[in-house]
Length: 225
Image 1 (cartoon, rainbow, N blue to C red):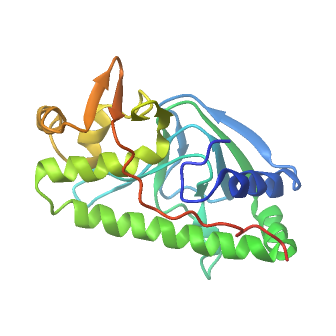
Image 2 (image 1 turned 180 degrees about the vertical axis):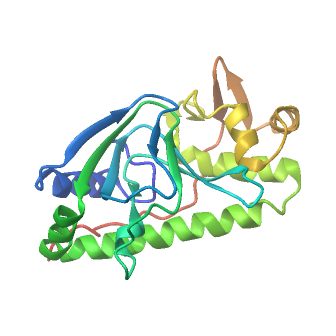
């Protein structure tokens, strides 16, 4: 599993190992398949072990609004942590690429939380990280178009693969998806990217010539002490 969040490979592997000890369902979705829908019953927690998914909600005008991209190490189904048990999903998630998930039913996830106190610390940190990403997305929406695109691409670098001169984004993270996430037209996104010397197009991939990731890794959150 290649983590695309703010923790290390070692921590992400330990998280997957905890899930594995509770006999999770191994679920796979093809690109563009719906993983869960807003208003549907939240039967458990999904751990993304491979691939990319997009989270969204429907606004008052019945428009689908994307809110976050999720990758390996991210969790889906936090409604279970609500005081009322979170019976329904608040957002929808759809596969952007092929996605593999480890799914734990409610009772199994509750047992994992009881058996592994460090998992609670991880979940708290993960929720905080997701909330900060949401706040940053709201802040980003107020930026000028070119700055908005630049900031989003910097965030998307967490999904990238290191190359000799920077970070290559997966082909699924294309101009169309960036336009959806920034609420800009594809033409404006393309113009913004072409004006950035640090971004290059290599075949079907965008390459960030200098890795802009600034986040600190959350180390040791799954160490049971």
